[in-house]
Amino acid sequence: MLSKPKILTPFINFNKKMNPFKSKSKKTKENNEKSLQILPSSSTSNDKQDKKSKRLIIAPAGGSSAILDFPEDVVSWIFAFLSAEDLLLGASIVCKKWRDIIVSERVYCLSPWIFKSNISQNGRFRSEGRDLFDKKLWKESISAFSKAIILNPRDHLAYFWRAYAYDENGQYDLAVKDFSKSLEFEPSDATAYSNRGATYRDMGSLEKALIDLKRALAMDPNSAPVHNNVGVVLGDMGLYEEAIREYTRALEIDPHHIVALRNRARRYEKMERFKEAKEDFDKVILMNPKDAVALRFFKSQKKLSKSPRAPSSVPAS
Image (cartoon, rainbow, N blue to C red; front, top):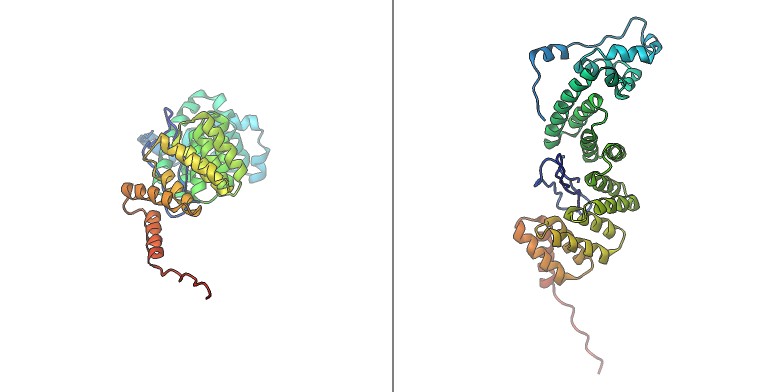
């Protein structure tokens, strides 16, 4: 099982697909080694903001051709006097040209006070996206993070979380794109490298996955989740002994990392090193008596012990 690691920053603390705001939160899909143990400000609007949010920008007379004929500089100046809600709920959905102008940040350069207002609204939508993400409402959380990005196109956390949601929704290409965008604004984020590597692994791109995971490990060499992830990819590549060394290193850093312990036990089992596998699965059961993978192992071992042995051959007289 692949975990998506945790990194400690002023904003983030996770396992990916690491959860940046919940240091102890781990998402474990226990029955499939190919699954991921994933590597995540609130404010309320006042009455005036609520009223403004109901206003929508109406396309000018003349249809879409008239919109496309507006000079970009003129449109940017007009947008500089609009509220964050009008930009988000009105202008950004009229046409692609207007949306591109908003995302390009020209509006914010013309009107710093609008930029400050948008940053506040951006935090609200990012917080809303995280709440929806925690409820596993992937599409809804993607929509909220997209709104946050429109209001602050340099918000690396919004890109990170939208990538995370895309990954959970099986949209791996979009996840990679957003993780890359997040890294563009925050290149020292080991978590984003680890999570992008985990997504590459989901896509079957093992070489790219290993490159990203090793980058993450270079930034955070004492991350047990990243060592576990490297072990999973090495195992996928058939490098079993190297994989076991990575699992072991993860357990040296965090002896209670049940994902790494389970993965090492499963690797021992596949290598038919049953004694070592049993020792690891015994520890897994102590941590989680209902662990499905460990229980399956002991059940299979019990069946093997009860199966009749083939009679030994008798030499011919």
